[in-house]
Image 1 (spheres, each protein chain N blue to C red):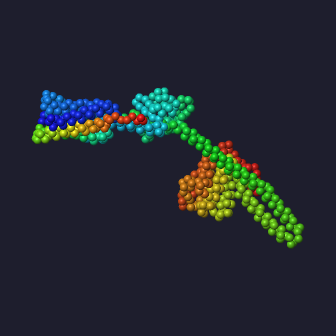
Image 2 (cartoon, one colour):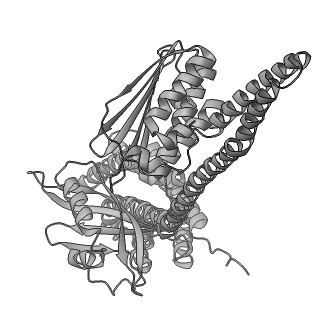
Image 3 (cartoon, each protein chain N blue to C red):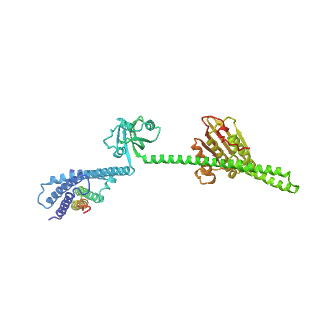
Length: 91
Length: 464
């Protein structure tokens, strides 16, 4: 466990507080739960990173990488849904 | 390849795909530009982070570990900015749609808006406000003095008073109808409403906002309606006076010809009776008695058609006669009559109208009130005459009766009220079910003076 990993976890916790406080507005973004799940997966990856330094290094390391992968895939999915080119109306 | 490196490779590919989506659909979702930029930064950081891990786990190099640390710290930071940007975007959207809704509502209601800053006297208007007066938004100086110059001079004092009352906290909101000068010179009626929305610690107004609605068409319609109503009242009064004139003409005809001739026949028959044989005297007596009855009924008819007393002796005498003949003699209802004895000069049409009105009230009392006692009082109060008709009958609900003129009694009262209103008088009604009724008729005296009998004198003597 390094200082950077702990710092990452603290910043992630602060972002979670921000999300909870502004959830009413965040609900207005398209597919909000997809983007929130992506962020949550990355936070989970940080948690596993910290846990990896304390015990069961092997399994937690794999879980960390899987979480980050899940976060990336969910984010790609969200970007695909939200930023997909739209057909021009009337054509 | 190490399985973890495979996972990292998939993560890299997912991030690259996401970056491609963002770059291709940059303007698509209608976000503010900061969101795609922040997402691009996030994806770049994630690609760096995953690439470092991939290189590390695939055994290629470990020298890029600083990139892993850099990405690890800045990825959550970037997420924080992204969420902040989302919130900002949502708030701006809400404000924008709220403004759009307000614009649509104002446009739908055809309202112009004004916004006054009390500290600087700056008064700003929207486009519709200026359009109502034929101006463009930039044609009117945004200052209170510009508005004051546009208000009709007759309306300005009232408008200022109304505004001052609201600014001083006497009224909850400002609302008044006044005229504003159109660019073409004509006057536009507006309904101005508004309220102070900001005050300082001492309660002094700092800012007020409100709306203007063009009500010129409504005002014109109201004016037309009033004119129509005046014409109708005038017509009703004229009709009533024409009816009275016609009644009088018929009564005069009956009196001067029919009645006189009947009296003459009777006198001639009585003269003949002395020269006829005794057998025929009884026959002549019967004819004379029949003639007496006929003369009496013709006289009653003359009285019912038009009271000769009204024209010969005036309103007071005619009313007393009406009470005696109509109320007491015909229906056995006791009465009292009061007159203050002061001279009451009345125009002939007013005199006739008051007599007709009292007659109608008395007929109503006889028909509906089940009264045992009726009182009529006539008195002069300054330059008005006041007639009070009261009874001890069953009374009625004034609001119900007046609100439904189609009812038997209601139309009569409505008619009296309207006719009195037209000549500047009034009818006050005080009645409750079970507690009798009291009607007060007020009319203006004739300004030129003259005695009652003279004013009402029609020039024909019908009273013998």
